[in-house]
Length: 382
Image: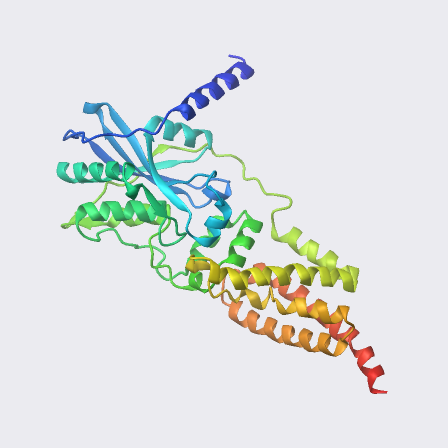
């Protein structure tokens, strides 16, 4: 088959799948041979897929049923989507579709899938099946997304624990790491995404990661989880193995290009360039200061990154424009002190090296204005 013909057929097949509506079921009685399993999808290259995904599969050959329930669905067409996402009241919802569609989607994305069959009784399988279907056709369909506390993994964990009648599935991995440390490896080859996430995240993400909130954590914890002294699940097995492609290292999405840009800014030795830089990070500091009051996401509250992205830098810009060099020097010195405080806070955190180039650059630029302010001060004394 010619590559062009094959490509067109693949596209046509994909369009047919996308045109299908989500499937729903009534009070179908599952057969005793029905299987319930947890699907753990490995990470992808897009921002939304960097942390993997969790879903529930119910397969009942006797009833010709093979369906996947997905708690990670959202609608980009939601009015004021980004404002709702930042505020923390964006509604995610559960959807259901055929396993073949699910499998095809991850084949296209070249992402591995692991499956763990749950050792549930027939009654427990039926209860879970009924509960999932009820969620599809009621207000339970929607939930308010929270990055750590309520996501596609949390929701599945809660559903299974609910059926078991007790909290059997708990976090057993990475207990002595903070949320920030846990997330860091997932963003290893995505420097600017990592930088943005670590800028917006505040104090909560430095707490020990007690919540079971990532798909791989769920898969590992499920391996050892027990109910009435017996394993809850079988060991995970690979049902889709991603093709191993050569690792692609971005020429621009890395620490080196970030450092290069900062070095070029420093080498200009131009006050206006430094002031533009301070204006941008000062405005970002205003956003970080206010978003904690606006957003319902606890992860963005109490963000000490405002010590680096400091709104006071906007005051430095104002006094420089007014040629009030006394206050330019005072504000610059205050910012130097706050940067040293910030460095101490950050010293034992995984993002310290990431922010170090900005800390050094900001210090050098501030010393530039302190030095520049000496001449007007001497003149005013005479």
